[in-house]
Length: 124
Image (cartoon, rainbow, N blue to C red; front, side, top):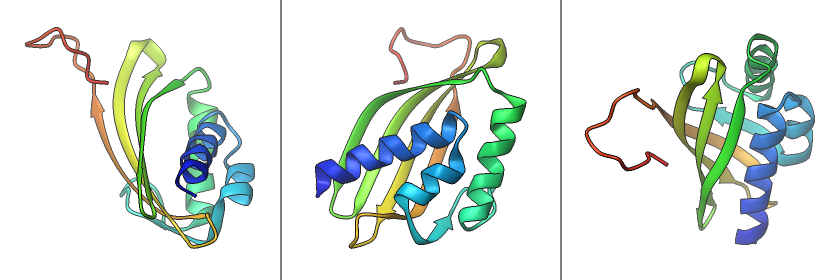
């Protein structure tokens, strides 16, 4: 079940990020969706609204999945995102799955990659 949850988390986020959040929720989300990101309304429709708006405003954004870590009913995605004007971010998204293998809760942390760094290590 862990490997399936990891695959589902990546597929869900990739599909939503690339412009089809409604289909992503239909395929991968359970009967509820608890959202902890304060920029996104709670629930499935709030998630869809946010990602549809992001696709209209920033259609050229890209995402790379760097790491996927899973334990029990949680999956974490570590990503590198590039937005217009080379605006780059590192994100860590956490998804909780129900006993049917569907996503029901989300937390995230987002950090902008600075233009200068005190070291040469990547943030992702």
